[in-house]
Image (cartoon, rainbow, N blue to C red; front, side, top):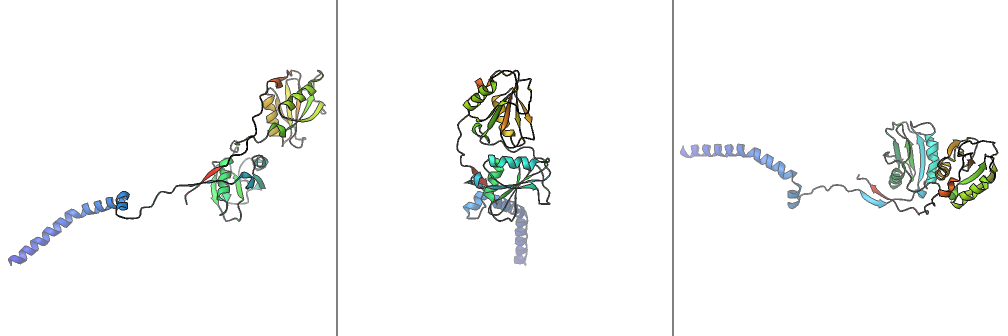
Length: 279
């Protein structure tokens, strides 16, 4: 009898101790499991945080970019397409987005299994806020999809147009002789390509300093001319084809080209590095 009672008391003590210690063991076990350093010490496998792989990106000259409009302003794809060769990219197809999927924000950059690095370069140089979207195309071409939130591309890392690439026709609209020839020589001295010189064939009369007249494809060239003639006005003439521009000298012209700074030397593109995201 005595031994039976003793056994029952012993079992009750063990049960009481187990009941008291169980929550502590569970909490302690959870803390142990959550402690990565302790797991490492004990030989357990702890997943390491992913670090993006930084690699040298391909040159833009090797990347073909298709430009599609998906809700951006009318004509946005065409305007962007004109800039791509000036930014050293290869231009592919241009038009409305053939995909029916919704596109939010500024747009998307779509790429295939072989085109991740190309997409990263396009994103970095053209539209950093665009989302990267992977599809199943062949090759390394990418799609630049312009959505409703798009306004302009990222600023170029190098000038897209240089003075030597801009042909300027200089026309005198005043009764002061010799201004066109003198101005044409000044433009050549600061690096612009020489065009026609004389009186305006369209018989324009400019009463202020000057007008820089350009066609739809000459907006960048015209802006470069205006930079050296800051008091001039830009005028779009849709009848002008190509990228050449007309500088029309006005009645208040004062030879402002005397203060034009030299153009910075042309520098070769620097290798671009991109970070492949964690998968």
